[in-house]
Length: 321
Image 1 (cartoon, rainbow, N blue to C red):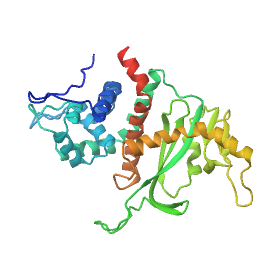
Image 2: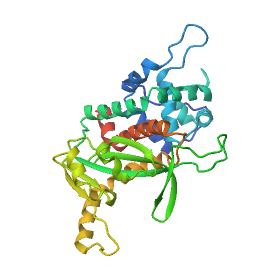
Image 3: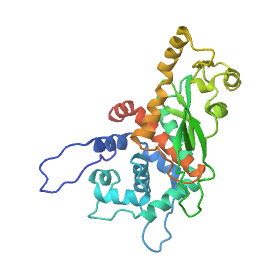
Image 4: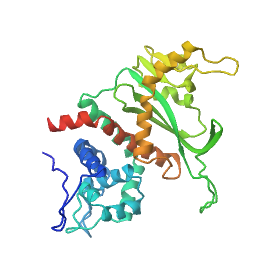
């Protein structure tokens, strides 16, 4: 049985309370398939050359990497947080009586290793395979949607320029600069099965075929995907398009249209739970790095962790069965 996450206390601590952070970390510790994810990274991880200090345990670095994503921490930020927070040290299996926290340079090198070999996508795929093995399989319903992730628009940096891979777009009456995360998500379990990262000025419908797995019977989307029924059918011949109707200046929605949109939205709105987890709970409201490739890797890890979080109750039942 996997070792449970425990907290060490001193003899002076007579009162304690399980915080939300501690509960969250305990639950995630139980449901993450650590062995399977270690096998993804292991072939690329430094094994030591017999000279100098031994490499830090792979799983410990993976745990620290996930802490960065859950709590929106930079490389130096996660080092300080580990020294400061007992619950994080417990999750990372760090005992300060035996060894110190990996420094920010070590954390940075591990992150670069993940990015260099595009392991974010492999971790995402492995998590979804694990969920399928647990009986949480992708159904015939897919929800497609996109969300804007802001990027710094300031030119006060070494290059004296904005990120060339990010672009601006207008939504409503407001302009945004950054990237878009396009996803295809299972309408039943709210788990993401496909991710596409683009600049913010790419229209939601432009990557629609890439968001479908091909075996859909139902596709849900907001009015940004109006008129794309044939595109959906080309990728998923058996799919019915449940796309919200759009109002036009000289042709407002009828009461029947509004009622139909409301029924479709009762399912389509589940995608907001996913974005709420990644942007609200995990704090990914702004890009963390320059360029689409690094942020695409980050998105894959975030949505892999989000998928586990979405079905954590079922996974916890299975882990204690």
